[in-house]
Length: 151
Image 1 (cartoon, rainbow, N blue to C red):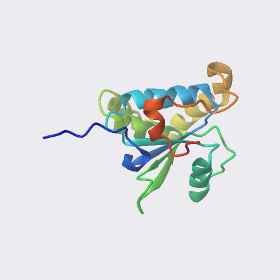
Image 2: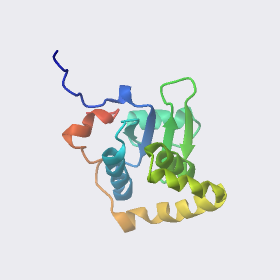
Image 3: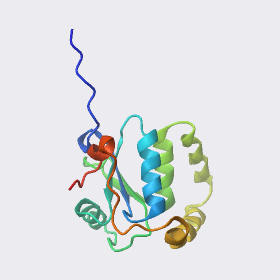
């Protein structure tokens, strides 16, 4: 019996959509971190500057020019789609990755206003601390299928 070769995951296989600032060094490091640890390929990715990112943020009533916010659209292809932002998005991602990252969900005991304040401090200084790219970096070939806006 022949076994079909493994295929790279595609956005159609993913359940959740991570929206990130494509020129932010920290955001791009986060995407690389997720690609390396999302063994079930439940996350697809789109830069906030791209067509999908802009459309999703608008769909859920956000400001697409606000690039200091990390978003996750959970169940993004279903009628149950919901957008999470800032620390809630980060905790959702950590919980979805599984152990040991799932332990971060214990931070939910901290009120969201405090978590989001800390998130905001980092977001305001992220370019200075982590750098800024002139354009969104091109993903490695083995991960290109995980990005919804491919050129």
